[in-house]
Length: 246
Image 1 (tube, helix red, strand yellow):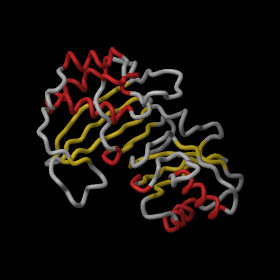
Image 2 (cartoon, rainbow, N blue to C red):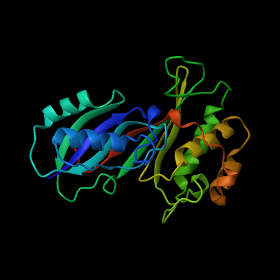
Image 3 (cartoon, rainbow, N blue to C red):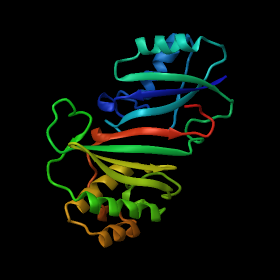
Image 4 (cartoon, rainbow, N blue to C red):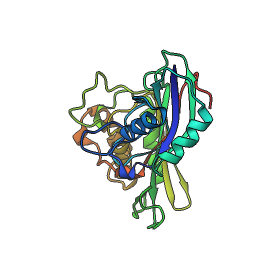
């Protein structure tokens, strides 16, 4: 039987989702917990990677297990057994061919900037005090929807077959002292969101105009784009599937 797991994690103390031989990862921590509580080897496949320090408010993974088990009881046991920075929301039986990564139709990320030093939110947002032109940043973000090749925002030497992504929304909003960037696409390249945010910040500082932003996208050159903002302000917030109940 195949199961999907809906979970969340604070990525502060992890080197991303994916297993790392010499560093703590969310995947390894989850594998150990499931294997111990189900008394059998369990390997979870995640919906995607998150980099070191990146958080997930909604993440999915799948695993196979031959025997039936009490799902509500297992969720309770996992949440008691796992460290405080990983939470299990649900375990969902799915058809045997369902795949957490390949069947995802859309992923949504948020990036959080604090405009003042919030001592209670230092691990969850980037403190940046310089004033930013939000209107211009939103005009630039809207340009992303007109393109599909985002090589200029990809980490160099990345082993991918294509740099094409279908971005369906990209916008900034302000909530009190927080600036929040939301972006959705069918897929994302490594470091893509953090590089986009860094470039948009340069737009907000009037270091890059709208024409220059478009030229960066069309250049396909990572060296022409802006800096990568710190990982701790980035959240994977939603993954869409056609067949997964929410």
